[in-house]
Structures are given as structure tokens and as C-alpha cells.
Image (cartoon, rainbow, N blue to C red; front, side, top):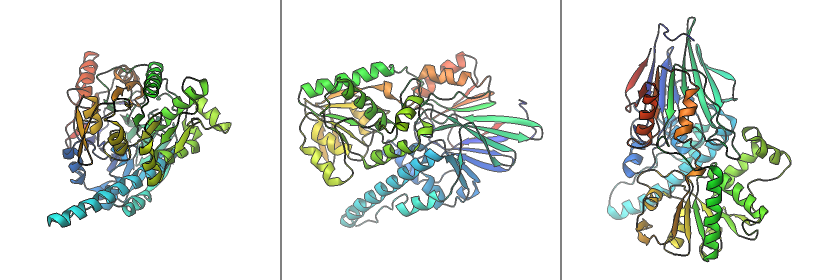
Length: 473
């Protein structure tokens, strides 16, 4: 593959530099402006304030948006992009399209509810209320810009001389690494966007597909500073945490992301109940309307899961349904769970405890010594989950200071992100890229650690600044 076409491309990172949030990359080539992801900032108040700020580019000038997957930090500002003028095509896998609709409508509903609460407060304080970032109508309108569905391994033309090939990233249902080939004359430049890379050996999702030799790689670095426990060790720890809590007469609260993590935890609990490692009669509450809907979407897409899960789905079995599962969509059913004082496993969002029904379950259980809280996913700086994990004695929920007396478990082997060794193994398939740009990782943690080790292996590593253009020659 030739490396120096006569007309260069430009890459600009428009996410938050040095943060695991708000993924958004702009590639300009052959007169085409391609946006890869358009994510929402999550975590501290300062980061969330960034969602309201200008994108750093004109949304109306974007020709195509390539979406790697449906997590909010990758798709969450799409309705705002449309609201501010985007009229191009959104290209994603069919599973990502279906999940993105669920995620965006839910995000819009939460923003509308937050705006309603602020309006009541604003009237008391004599000020103008805050407007929601976007409404459910905006989110529904944005879905109309989703165009062609990408199929893993098949190139799709997204501009003159520009092809995008989606590879299975193994992160969540429909997630993709996107390989962009830019052809100018008889020369080709290849830029690979990793998206979020999954880890190996987990049920439900297939292992991530390695990238092809590439000229440039834009690569996530979430867990670039650590190695995960094995899946089996993590599953064993989960079972022990549940068993120990049940013996002490408490409840197990598991803050869970609605996409992938909820389904994976249900999968393992079902296996344990069927094998006798956990009580079959144990009540398991999936208290998340979005997770319930997401689980149904997983059942629609057997083509995007691993072979064992595919065979179960083909037989009509539901791998996500433990014997004692109770799904609670409506608010009243959710509130009834607060009267369960022991013996239950409660899965609820959000995974970082920044909102959703899990905050109510934490309020009712976090102060109880016989209970446990099990974190099975990433927690960003500034979130209640991160505060609890880092050893806070109390956290503020609904205007009250709640003591942290429950046992706290952090099981990182369930992560949907590749760890340090898997990231290095993944990028090794890209050959000798001219530069590896590290994104989607915290500085002084994953990003810096991975940069150090990649440079030691001879890679040229860039840690791009937000809104700064980089010429790809």
C-alpha cells in the first residue's frame, strides 16, 4: 500500500482530550468531511457542560457520520448535531442502529425530566430555566438520518474514492472498528478507527477482529494501564459476592450499563442457577426499562453474537433469563423492590450511578452492612460510582448524605474494553503505521501508560489535543 498520496487528509479529534468520554473524530479527505462518532461527555459537571458547547466544526458541513457503536459516549450528541444543521447520512451496523434509537430516546427523556425539575427550581429562584440539550422529538428526527446498514467485512463507499469497512470490535452488539481507505489516483491511504475494542474469551460477543495493516491508527486507551482478571476468575468472584451477601441476609446491588453488561451478568447468573451454584429461587430484578429493551434487541441479532450464544438463540432458548428473573419496566414495580430487605440481586442503571433507578437502590441499601454493591464496569472521574470505588465514606443521593457501609466489590474482568496486553496485541496487526493516535483514555492513567509502552516498541504515538488538526501525509 502506497503511503504518500499527492493530496493529504486531515484528522481532528473533537472529543475531550485525555478523557474516556465524548468520542468524536473528524476526517477530511478528497473534499469529503467524515465524522467518526458523535459522543456525549459524561462524568463531572464540567465535562457535562461541554455537551452544550459548539462542536468545533460546522455540523451542516459534515457529509457523513460513521458510528462505531451505540454507547452514549459515542452516539449521544447525534440529535444535537442534527439540531444544529447536520443533513448527511449516518452509517452503522443494523444492530447499532437499533440500539442507538433506544439509547438516544432514553437520553432525551432523561434530559426532558431534568429540565422539568430545573424549571420548577428556576421559578422559585426567579431565573430562566435550563433547556434540555435535545428532546425526544429531536432524537426521533435524528434517527431519520440513519441510512445504509454496514455489514462486517464488506466495504461501503462513503465518498469519492473513500471506502469504509466495518470489522467486529467485540465490544457490544453491533460494535465496529472502522477501516477507512482513501484513494487518490493510484495511491491509497488507510486510516483505522478502533472504536472501543472488546476483550477476548467472553460469552455473547465474538472476539474482536484485528485490524489490517494501516497507515494511521486512531485507537482507544481506556485500560491501557492495567490487565484484567480472567473472565473465569471474575465470574467466580461474582458468585462468591452474591453467595456471601445472601448468607448475611442482604441484597446485592449491581449498577449495570444497559448494553452488554446487563446481558452478560444475567447470562452468568443463569448459568450458576442452572448448575446449582446459586439458588434457583433467588429473585433477580432487572430494574431498567432500557436494559430490558436492549436484551430484546440482542435476541433480534443472532448474527452478531458468538457461536455458542447463536446456537442457544437458534434453539429458542433465552440465555439471559435466570429462573428467578423479574423485569420491572414501570415505576411502581421498581419502587416495590425497595421493600425487599434481603436475598435479592438487583441490576439497575446507570452503570456509573449518575442517574437512573440504581440511585434509589443505593439509597436504600448502601448504608446497610449486610448488603453489597458490585461494580462490573468502568467508572469515570466525578461519578458516584468512582467515589464509592475510591473509598468514599459517604455519598450524596437525592439531597442526603448516605453512609457507605455495604461491602464494595470491583470486578474489572467483566469489562467490555480490552486491557493493556490486548490493546498492544490488537495494534500489532496494523503493521508499522506512520502514527498511532491515542484517544478515549485518561491522561496519567491508561493513555500515558499505553503511550509509554507503545513507544518502547517503536511506534510513533500521538496524544492529540482537542480541536487541533493533524495532517496525514
